[in-house]
Length: 93
Image (tube, rainbow, N blue to C red; front, side, top):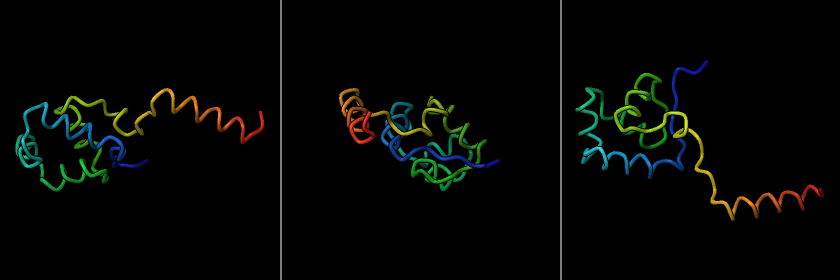
């Protein structure tokens, strides 16, 4: 079992927005608030693996859903419908 986790790269804008929304002007501000290394926050924001405990702590502070943030952003509905149609044509069903 993995002891580290990372956000999906699609969610970087969500993380940056959460930083601002929670009043952290910089990643360093968040690191200082949590008492963790700036490199840990930087790794989190840049989709690099961080320990599960730090990942959860950062998500909680930024009010992010820790499960959703690890998944790719869902495509918008029209694109998703088009893609399903395209897959059906390729498969021949």
